[in-house]
Length: 106
Image 1 (cartoon, helix red, strand yellow):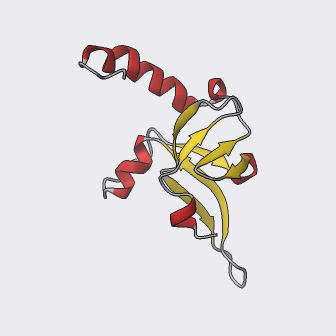
Image 2 (cartoon, helix red, strand yellow; image 1 turned 60 degrees about the horizontal axis):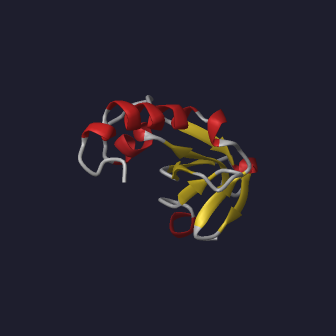
């Protein structure tokens, strides 16, 4: 598997097929004498800001690699969107900001 091509920026979907964000980052364990291992995927605004060079620990959520069911066009997770903190942030943004922007909820 090519991690950047096959995981990074792919859509995340929960058990019910609901879109819950995208893979914004990868957490990799680098242990001496062992192959690198993907430990988790990250999603959230904090990860995007890190990629742009703005260091922050806010607005990020780690999802264990054990929660991934399938990687295809999207990354299917074995979680419910209601359990994820990132969903609460997206709902807040949708109801407080995007609804006031023409076409923001489309």
